[in-house]
Image 1 (tube, one colour):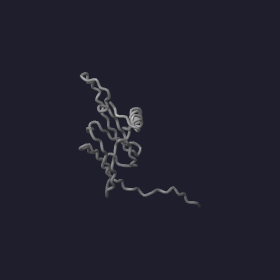
Image 2 (cartoon, rainbow, N blue to C red):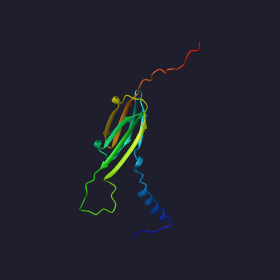
Image 3 (cartoon, rainbow, N blue to C red):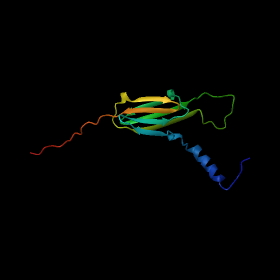
Image 4 (cartoon, rainbow, N blue to C red):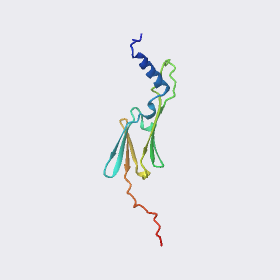
Length: 132
């Protein structure tokens, strides 16, 4: 039997809200470091294997996607609630113009490490037109 107290209504409402609007959309915690010649992004992805993670570069954004999709059915048990087997997370990082072929990615102990070499800044072009 569930113990009732004055605040239990808020607990029940919170649980109902979490069921309707899961918070898993952006659980990717990350650290971004600037080193002399590169940027390093460490992204926490506990429970994911490297085969379940992808990194794409498009129009200045690195997008990290991680997904579990074990749709196998367990016929031995009747689940009341099942949250572990399926999940999907995605997060984008604006990195600007980079040499994407030089980006290095490594996954170890639930941490995805992205190493992004700094691109030498090109001299700024001016579009000034001389007046005669």
